[in-house]
Image (cartoon, rainbow, N blue to C red; front, top):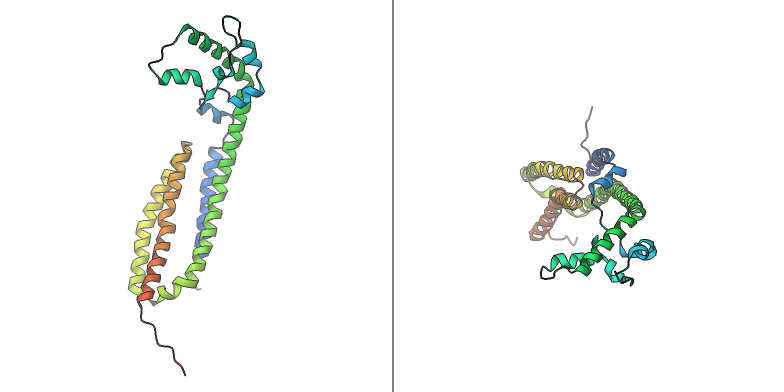
Length: 242
């Protein structure tokens, strides 16, 4: 019985299948549900929502003399009241009785708006997290297959003729060096990626994912460039005119 070596495309397909299995399992274990939002501290309702639902602001937004408070008193920056944010940043600003009154009004407006705004915000957050989770499971294998197909086309068209001209011991050395570097590299950054996913740290997960691809994808690209440059220094055989 003859055992054939798997082709490069089959190797990339295997990586994609393994990704689907591992990432799919992690996604199932950490599928965003209603309790997903408990990990996040929600701030105040955004300005556009408050402009569409001014009921709470119209109910409480009055100064002690009965004048209506300006809309600017209820503007929000990154989930915080803009006025309170300015005062907390500039320590030279001292709170006046008017500021204390405005802060109390904003607390009342916030307590009134939360039951109206928070459910929709939580649902939007859960939906967004689920889309990102599904995308993280499906898109990388597709990306790997596309990159694998492109690398295989480049290999067959440009690299393979030059690679086969190298002595066998040099090719064996390159492959062993690639394996020695790639295996621990993939293991380490794969662990970092899974750990970041479990912590729901999108920034760290994105960084670990791209670092993970540097050696498996970057090394063949570098080797391709090196072989192409080396081929340019080889002496070409004269073309027979017979």
